[in-house]
Image (cartoon, rainbow, N blue to C red; front, side, top):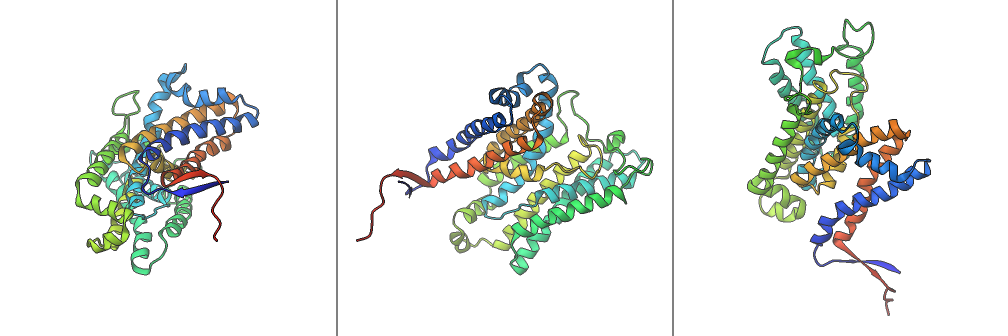
Length: 361
């Protein structure tokens, strides 16, 4: 029989190889899924991973990698800080929505004024909105010992209802002929997160994501707070003896992840999405969890994983239009990445053994 034997020390080789093996396993099993749906599995995998980069219309799809990858990286960087410390923020989707609402609210409040300071105010409002929403589970955890996983997750549904309410009510476009949704921020120069270089997909959200990667790397490797985050996640008892204050760490990690998720929402609503609408959120907050773990909670790894996940988003859309694959199949394919990553991650700490177990005498 096959049994698992705990390793004396975690395997560094498996730790590095697991993401690659998980991607390959996802491609194999995903191909079988596509084949069961009546699509050529090789063609489906090739479409998802090849077409956006080297296909006939790659010149159009390549800039979209930055557009899709930026919010994923920005949110995943914030989540990774908490995950490293054992603080589990599962509600980034809600913080993403609130950041978009508060940022867009600033733009709509100043409409039709055209001034240079509006977009910086939107950025600040987006970050503060996401941070404030994340402070709810943070304060409840530090004051009353509640579970931040459940509270942050439930707040996603509250944020979604608030989004629908704003789209149909307070933020509804008075000139929109009764259709739900706010004014189009892309037509409002002071509030538009436009491309910095035409045709590249590079906007301020991409810049913010790169800054977040650098910030997180420096924080985790060159700052005392980063040491406390890593120590708390790896050895909680040792962290307490070293003087780490758990409550302060919870507030920082949840607040920072909420702020970055709020920024992602602001850059999305003022750029690619263009307006507050009922279907504004597309699951970036949940997908970023996959990105964080696929990147091994390392800033550079998250940057690469964000690009890979953006590739599956764009390639998945191409596969839907060209091959007729259902959206649910693409979502299942993306979810397999996390499933195989967590399953194979077991081999980092355990070694499979084949043979009979010893019976007690």
